[in-house]
Each structure stands twice: as C-alpha cells, then as structure tokens.
Length: 185
Image (cartoon, rainbow, N blue to C red; front, side, top):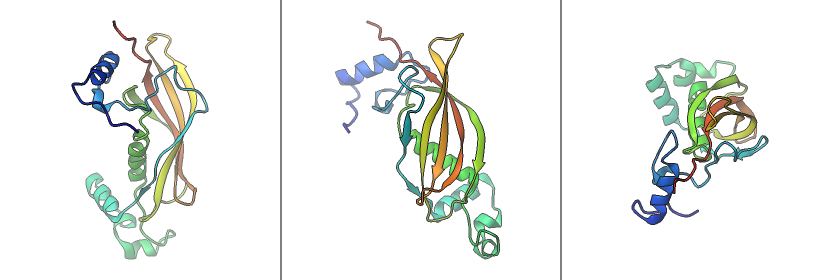
C-alpha cells in the first residue's frame, strides 16, 4: 500500500479535483485507494475486515457512554449466574465496532452519501471480552436512483463473526452511494 500523496502535490490536487463534486468531500488524505462508486460494485462482491479483540475497556467505555450499566455487562458475579456464564459485550457496542471495522475497508470512502438503515438485524451469539470479531460483507442489491442519476442504493448482507467463525450478528445494511464524479477539464 502506498502512502497518501503530500497535501499540495500534483497527485493530491488531481485527487481533490476528481472528488470535489461528490456529496461528501473528505479531501485527498481521506480518499481510500479501495473506494468503489455506484457502477463499480457488483452483486456478490464480498469483503472481510481485519479482526479486533474486545477488551474490558471496550465494555466499560460503551456501558458508561451509553448508560447501559446492566449487570450482565458490568458485574462478573451476577453474569456468572446467568445462562451466559460470564459478562458479555453489549449488542449495540458490537454493532458500533462493526461499523468501524467495515469503514476501514475503504470501499465507501468517499463514495457513501448516507447510511440509510439496517434491516433484519439479528443477534445470534454472545460476544465476550477476549473475543476477536471481524465483519464479512457481501453486496446483495444495487438500485440506481430513477430521479437522481448520480447515485443509488446499495444493500449489503453483513455478518459479524468471532474467532471461531461463529456468526454473532447478521443482517442487511443499506447505503446511498454516489457514482464516480466526472472529471472537469
């Protein structure tokens, strides 16, 4: 992987000009080399992120930040007596972490205009402190906009997997994706 061009280099200026027409202009240092626009993605295209291990800090920070201090997350003695046998990471915390992992793939940076929603999301297995999660994402639907030809809706099937390849969460994410901007001469 190459490093991003210097901010005032000719390469940087060309990248900036190419992306200045997009809805979310992030600047040349925030444009991923992996970016894909509407018309460059295909049904069946699949990505898998790197893994990230859940820590005690993740659980405490998410619980404190969200206000979800349920003893299943915060009290080991309580959690030991549950069907889970120990503390779990919050389901919404797992989802939030998955968003970050997925964004690190770079394919929507800066082509995504807006995140439109989540459909059919299911929590299938607990995620514990010490588990390592990763995201597998596959494009399952592409709908170009009938009224705005510079964009369309892309739906992906997303699975959050643990280190044993067990699917912990899954469902569909829906994003509004722009077409590659035309270069102005």
